[in-house]
Image (cartoon, rainbow, N blue to C red):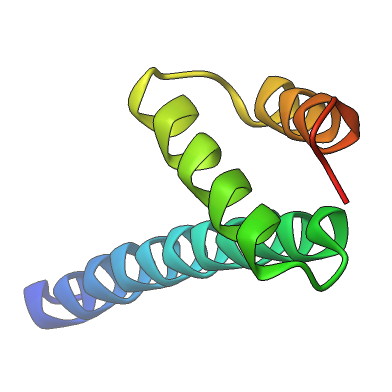
Length: 81
């Protein structure tokens, strides 16, 4: 194989990995937003509050499973619905 073939293979693999990573992150964001909408049950005030709480947890570096658990606790806590 010549240098050009190796270059094309390397670039293709790097782009495929990058695409997969970006797609995976986007799907995770969609799942997070779906959870927030489901927990808010159509209440725009609750949805805004949960989105704000979610952004705070992301800034604090809390992992996704823990964020989901805390969002569910926050949605079922006092002052909801």
